[in-house]
Amino acid sequence: MSDQWRKRWQEGRIGFHLQQAHPALLRHWASLDVANRTKVLVPLCGKSLDMRWLADKGYPVLGIEFAPEAIEQFLVQRSTAVSRYRQAGFTISRQGSVELWCGDFFHLHIQQAAEIGAFYDRASLIALPPATRQRYAFHLAQLVPPGAKGLLISLSHNDGNAGPPYSVPASEIESLFTANFTLTFLEEGSPDERGRTESVWALERRGPRL
Image 1 (cartoon, rainbow, N blue to C red):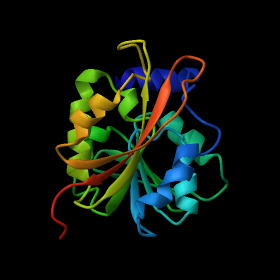
Image 2: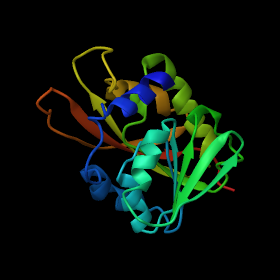
Image 3: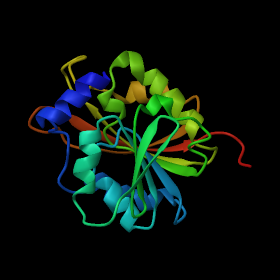
Protein backbone atom coordinates (compact mmCIF):
# COMPACT_ATOMS: atom_id res chain seq x y z
CA MET A 1 0.00 0.00 0.00
CA SER A 2 2.73 2.48 0.99
CA ASP A 3 4.81 1.67 -2.10
CA GLN A 4 1.75 2.15 -4.29
CA TRP A 5 1.10 5.66 -2.97
CA ARG A 6 4.76 6.61 -3.10
CA LYS A 7 4.83 5.64 -6.78
CA ARG A 8 1.71 7.71 -7.50
CA TRP A 9 3.35 10.80 -6.02
CA GLN A 10 6.60 10.18 -7.86
CA GLU A 11 4.73 9.85 -11.17
CA GLY A 12 2.38 12.78 -10.47
CA ARG A 13 -0.75 10.57 -10.58
CA ILE A 14 -2.58 12.60 -7.93
CA GLY A 15 -5.92 13.40 -9.51
CA PHE A 16 -7.44 13.42 -6.03
CA HIS A 17 -5.55 16.62 -5.16
CA LEU A 18 -7.61 19.82 -5.27
CA GLN A 19 -6.15 23.21 -6.13
CA GLN A 20 -8.23 24.84 -3.40
CA ALA A 21 -9.71 23.98 -0.03
CA HIS A 22 -12.55 21.47 -0.26
CA PRO A 23 -15.95 23.23 -0.44
CA ALA A 24 -17.44 20.88 2.17
CA LEU A 25 -14.74 21.91 4.64
CA LEU A 26 -15.65 25.55 4.13
CA ARG A 27 -19.36 24.81 4.53
CA HIS A 28 -19.29 22.56 7.55
CA TRP A 29 -16.21 23.08 9.72
CA ALA A 30 -17.75 25.95 11.71
CA SER A 31 -20.77 23.79 12.57
CA LEU A 32 -18.50 21.42 14.53
CA ASP A 33 -17.84 24.23 17.02
CA VAL A 34 -14.19 23.26 17.48
CA ALA A 35 -12.50 25.67 19.87
CA ASN A 36 -9.94 28.00 18.32
CA ARG A 37 -6.30 26.85 18.66
CA THR A 38 -7.37 23.18 18.85
CA LYS A 39 -4.80 21.03 17.05
CA VAL A 40 -6.31 19.13 14.11
CA LEU A 41 -5.08 15.71 13.01
CA VAL A 42 -5.11 15.18 9.22
CA PRO A 43 -4.25 11.54 8.37
CA LEU A 44 -2.82 10.68 4.93
CA CYS A 45 -2.74 14.41 4.26
CA GLY A 46 -0.85 14.58 0.95
CA LYS A 47 -0.28 18.24 0.08
CA SER A 48 -3.88 19.20 0.77
CA LEU A 49 -4.63 22.92 0.83
CA ASP A 50 -7.26 22.11 3.43
CA MET A 51 -4.39 22.20 5.93
CA ARG A 52 -3.56 25.77 4.93
CA TRP A 53 -7.19 26.75 5.34
CA LEU A 54 -7.40 25.24 8.82
CA ALA A 55 -4.13 26.84 9.90
CA ASP A 56 -5.16 30.24 8.56
CA LYS A 57 -8.40 29.92 10.55
CA GLY A 58 -6.41 29.51 13.75
CA TYR A 59 -6.18 25.71 14.05
CA PRO A 60 -2.70 24.16 14.33
CA VAL A 61 -2.42 21.13 12.06
CA LEU A 62 -0.64 17.80 12.46
CA GLY A 63 -0.61 16.07 9.09
CA ILE A 64 0.61 12.49 8.57
CA GLU A 65 1.89 11.49 5.15
CA PHE A 66 4.00 8.55 3.95
CA ALA A 67 5.30 10.15 0.72
CA PRO A 68 8.03 12.75 1.31
CA GLU A 69 7.34 14.08 -2.19
CA ALA A 70 3.89 15.23 -1.05
CA ILE A 71 5.32 16.99 1.99
CA GLU A 72 7.98 18.82 0.00
CA GLN A 73 5.41 19.95 -2.58
CA PHE A 74 3.27 21.34 0.21
CA LEU A 75 6.14 23.22 1.83
CA VAL A 76 7.32 24.97 -1.34
CA GLN A 77 3.89 26.56 -1.81
CA ARG A 78 4.95 29.25 0.66
CA SER A 79 8.28 30.89 1.35
CA THR A 80 7.85 30.64 5.13
CA ALA A 81 10.81 29.08 6.95
CA VAL A 82 10.71 25.34 7.67
CA SER A 83 12.21 23.63 10.71
CA ARG A 84 12.93 19.90 10.62
CA TYR A 85 13.57 17.28 13.27
CA ARG A 86 13.02 13.58 13.97
CA GLN A 87 10.88 11.89 16.59
CA ALA A 88 10.24 8.18 17.12
CA GLY A 89 10.70 7.17 13.49
CA PHE A 90 9.02 10.22 11.95
CA THR A 91 10.70 13.03 10.05
CA ILE A 92 8.81 16.18 11.03
CA SER A 93 8.68 19.42 9.06
CA ARG A 94 7.14 22.45 10.72
CA GLN A 95 6.06 25.50 8.72
CA GLY A 96 4.12 28.07 10.67
CA SER A 97 1.38 26.23 12.56
CA VAL A 98 1.45 23.20 10.26
CA GLU A 99 3.44 20.11 11.29
CA LEU A 100 3.92 17.42 8.65
CA TRP A 101 4.97 14.03 9.96
CA CYS A 102 6.50 11.81 7.30
CA GLY A 103 5.83 8.18 8.13
CA ASP A 104 3.19 5.53 8.64
CA PHE A 105 -0.07 6.74 10.20
CA PHE A 106 -0.45 3.39 11.96
CA HIS A 107 2.86 3.97 13.74
CA LEU A 108 1.66 7.19 15.36
CA HIS A 109 1.22 6.56 19.09
CA ILE A 110 -1.23 8.17 21.46
CA GLN A 111 1.62 9.88 23.34
CA GLN A 112 2.63 11.64 20.13
CA ALA A 113 -0.97 12.76 19.56
CA ALA A 114 -1.44 14.12 23.07
CA GLU A 115 -2.26 17.64 21.87
CA ILE A 116 -4.79 16.52 19.23
CA GLY A 117 -8.33 17.73 19.84
CA ALA A 118 -9.99 17.45 16.41
CA PHE A 119 -9.52 15.67 13.09
CA TYR A 120 -10.24 15.98 9.39
CA ASP A 121 -10.43 13.20 6.80
CA ARG A 122 -11.04 14.18 3.21
CA ALA A 123 -9.18 11.43 1.33
CA SER A 124 -7.82 9.05 3.97
CA LEU A 125 -10.50 6.42 4.47
CA ILE A 126 -11.23 6.18 0.75
CA ALA A 127 -7.52 5.68 0.01
CA LEU A 128 -7.47 2.45 1.99
CA PRO A 129 -8.49 -1.02 0.75
CA PRO A 130 -11.33 -2.79 2.60
CA ALA A 131 -9.03 -4.93 4.75
CA THR A 132 -7.32 -1.84 6.20
CA ARG A 133 -10.30 0.41 6.88
CA GLN A 134 -11.33 -1.26 10.15
CA ARG A 135 -7.79 -0.83 11.44
CA TYR A 136 -7.85 2.83 10.40
CA ALA A 137 -11.13 3.55 12.21
CA PHE A 138 -9.89 1.87 15.39
CA HIS A 139 -6.51 3.64 15.32
CA LEU A 140 -8.16 7.02 14.80
CA ALA A 141 -10.37 6.33 17.82
CA GLN A 142 -7.27 5.53 19.88
CA LEU A 143 -5.54 8.78 18.91
CA VAL A 144 -8.28 11.32 19.65
CA PRO A 145 -9.76 12.00 23.10
CA PRO A 146 -13.44 11.74 24.08
CA GLY A 147 -15.30 14.77 22.81
CA ALA A 148 -12.95 15.33 19.87
CA LYS A 149 -14.86 16.34 16.76
CA GLY A 150 -14.02 15.80 13.14
CA LEU A 151 -15.20 16.01 9.58
CA LEU A 152 -15.19 12.99 7.26
CA ILE A 153 -15.66 13.29 3.49
CA SER A 154 -16.28 9.91 1.88
CA LEU A 155 -16.94 8.69 -1.64
CA SER A 156 -19.17 6.03 -3.17
CA HIS A 157 -19.21 4.71 -6.73
CA ASN A 158 -20.27 1.67 -8.71
CA ASP A 159 -16.83 0.24 -9.42
CA GLY A 160 -16.90 -2.32 -6.62
CA ASN A 161 -13.48 -2.57 -4.97
CA ALA A 162 -11.76 -0.62 -7.74
CA GLY A 163 -9.59 2.15 -6.39
CA PRO A 164 -8.12 4.16 -4.96
CA PRO A 165 -10.20 6.11 -4.33
CA TYR A 166 -12.33 3.26 -3.07
CA SER A 167 -16.07 3.29 -2.64
CA VAL A 168 -17.07 3.54 1.03
CA PRO A 169 -20.86 3.73 1.30
CA ALA A 170 -22.84 5.05 4.24
CA SER A 171 -23.53 1.58 5.60
CA GLU A 172 -19.80 0.87 5.89
CA ILE A 173 -19.07 4.23 7.52
CA GLU A 174 -21.67 3.48 10.16
CA SER A 175 -20.26 -0.01 10.68
CA LEU A 176 -16.69 1.28 11.01
CA PHE A 177 -17.23 4.23 13.32
CA THR A 178 -20.41 3.82 15.37
CA ALA A 179 -18.71 1.85 18.15
CA ASN A 180 -16.42 4.76 19.04
CA PHE A 181 -17.99 7.85 17.48
CA THR A 182 -21.32 9.61 17.29
CA LEU A 183 -22.06 10.14 13.58
CA THR A 184 -24.10 12.89 12.00
CA PHE A 185 -24.79 12.78 8.27
CA LEU A 186 -24.40 16.29 6.83
CA GLU A 187 -24.83 16.11 3.07
CA GLU A 188 -24.50 14.10 -0.11
CA GLY A 189 -23.38 15.66 -3.36
CA SER A 190 -24.50 14.99 -6.90
CA PRO A 191 -22.65 12.29 -8.88
CA ASP A 192 -19.71 13.57 -10.91
CA GLU A 193 -18.95 12.61 -14.51
CA ARG A 194 -17.55 9.27 -13.29
CA GLY A 195 -20.63 8.48 -11.22
CA ARG A 196 -18.83 9.12 -7.93
CA THR A 197 -20.79 10.70 -5.09
CA GLU A 198 -19.29 12.40 -2.04
CA SER A 199 -20.90 12.30 1.38
CA VAL A 200 -20.00 14.44 4.38
CA TRP A 201 -20.19 13.36 8.02
CA ALA A 202 -19.56 14.96 11.40
CA LEU A 203 -18.00 12.66 14.00
CA GLU A 204 -17.55 13.05 17.75
CA ARG A 205 -15.47 10.64 19.83
CA ARG A 206 -17.58 8.84 22.39
CA GLY A 207 -16.56 8.47 26.04
CA PRO A 208 -16.38 10.50 29.23
CA ARG A 209 -14.43 13.73 29.04
CA LEU A 210 -11.69 14.28 31.59
